[in-house]
Amino acid sequence: MNQLKPIIENNQRVLLTSQLAEAYGADSERIVKNFNRNKDRYKENKHYLLLEGQELREFRAKGQIDLSLNLNRLYLWTEKGAWLHAKSLNTDQAWDAYEMLVDEYYTVKENVTPLSKEKALVTVLRTTADLVESHDSIIKEQHEIRKLITSVDNKVEEQITLTSGEQRRLQKGVARRVYEFTEDKTEAAKLFRELYREIKDRFGVASYKDVKQRELQSAIRYIENWIPRKVS
Image (cartoon, rainbow, N blue to C red; front, side):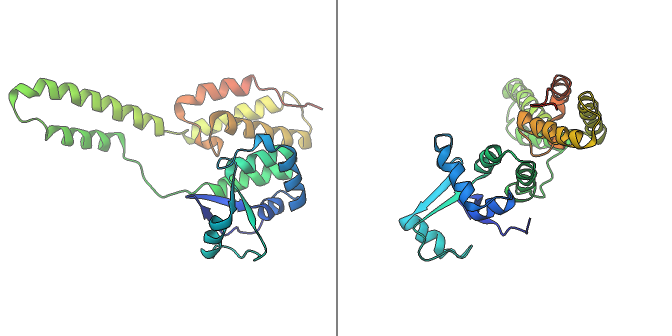
């Protein structure tokens, strides 16, 4: 897949029909036919953006990509729309391309280092300490501080993803489950892709590495009870 130049509309990355078709190893006509055949499943502004009239003229004026002057309507596909098209095509190439799009195009990763739990607590304590102005308010403020500490603690825990050891534990669980169904390398490769894809869908992450630490046991149980769509 060629390096895609980002197209931004409504503060999100989107793709042209031609770009989606190329990534999925299909042609634009097939993408359009799949869309028209399943139109009731696609929601405007959720799965796609439709630009016409003044909106299309304003988009063209931004110069993000060259468009034909004869074009009177333009479909732009969001990440969720790309997922529906991959599901409709249901080929290994389409699913592999979708995962690559999520990892390398739709997901904008920022180099932001979250506060450590200790720094977050210090920040909270310093802020709330400034509120304490008299002896009579100390008890009330202490109560508020405890509430804030609990809130920060919960938010920090929400950010923690799997450690390298926990990632390895999940990988071993996937391998163990896949080889319970087949020892054929080609078939196993398909099952690996299928299971990892379902883990990402089930836990709403771009990669199995992003599974939250608190959800590790749920992920392991899910893997242990997983059944592939089709076992040959």
